[in-house]
Length: 82
Image (cartoon, rainbow, N blue to C red; front, top):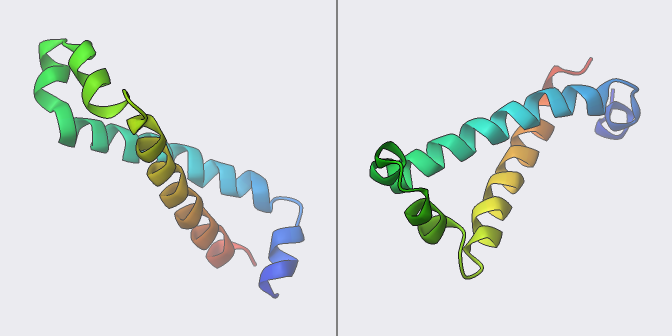
């Protein structure tokens, strides 16, 4: 089965979302803990917001994670679809 045939199969995008959403959540949590774990455990969410999301930083933060999740889920779904 070619990649285009796999993309057109009925359950492909459902399986894609089953992989992409948990992976996005996992990558987001790991990233937040890596950049501001002290502020998270101290309950200082204003600092977490300032470090990760203010002044246009949210675009880079979410863009990278959504892109990585999309590519990973696409790869895994194509690989597992028969």
